[in-house]
Image (cartoon, rainbow, N blue to C red; front, side):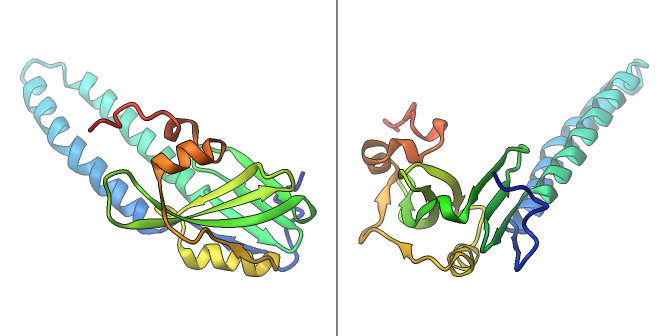
Length: 185
């Protein structure tokens, strides 16, 4: 198993789209600011505002932790292999000699017209070990990963829907993508 410290020679650092952080912070502020403003307004007269302040501080601490986790998220690629730290802290790695292929799939979301690239790094037995989804990683990053590893990107001829992936390659999807709870919408 590769470690972050081993990845030093010719290492390329890939980071998720930067706009995700600012969009998330704007959404969090848009949601919490009116709620806390009303909560303070209702509780200041009653003298219970310290409870609201404590909850507000807790929400701020959670936001700071989320920002730190986002900033730690990265993929390191070198000729020795790939090392990934996900948003929730999960670490995945695969050595170069364990990589079977790189499959770039253009994936439609159900009921959507546009596609997003999804790069699957498969081991020698065809099991996906690392996945870069287009909503978080750029196509340029995916192509750079293939260049550094000196491997071709294998792509299906046509784009596929999430439903097609569920039926043909369910093991390639995250657990929540394999369960079409609201597929009838």
